[in-house]
Image (tube, rainbow, N blue to C red):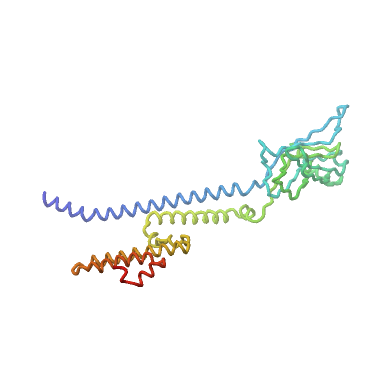
Length: 344
């Protein structure tokens, strides 16, 4: 039993340090992987938040519903078809972003009817207004159906007759009307809605759609048209920045004494910053300090020279000299110092 115990102890002494080292390196590796994963997710989240806030929606659509006043006879239109579209919700504009240029287009789906071919050109007018109902900007464009001869329309009808019969296609045209090639909403007078008016009493419209396209330039153009490259650059930049901040924090927390070595303590003598005293007070302090210096000198000599006691007359003379040195600023004292016999 003793032999087995000794063998077990020797194996434990040999294996335990290695297991401890492996455990330490494994824990360190897991900490590094977890930290890098967290930094990576944070970097991706920051880039996604920046992209969502900085880059607006590229294309937006709103249906256009025209309204008009019917004539008293009950047939035909007695007013221009007009549509009112709201651009805001709860007082906040949901279409236009301040400072961003937009292209505003209206797509009209009109039938190839005799009425539309006979009216020729017609005007399409758009008006943007603010929250007070005041018109901010107005734009108008002319439009008409594309011309087709009688022979071309007949051939087209014969060729696509089966599709016309089953309803797969219709005899209609798409009119693409660009009203604002570059519109920028104002921060001081933003628009909250718009009106679209077709200035014709005989126009026939199947459907109308308002389309708003954001016009990008600079960083927005790069972010939108080069999404993979911009994503890699953005996430890498965030990753390097956050990693540097974490590394600096870890260094300060792990090695605090190295900062003390690199940043020595500087002691400032505040006595230099005191105000300069007046000459009279400085002279008095000099005399007093001279007297105290003489007394300290005398005391030091007395304490050090213990073997030879001083003569009483010498001691009296030194004490008198201290008093006269303290009062050297008076003329009478100067006269008494010049005659040593008066001291005794």
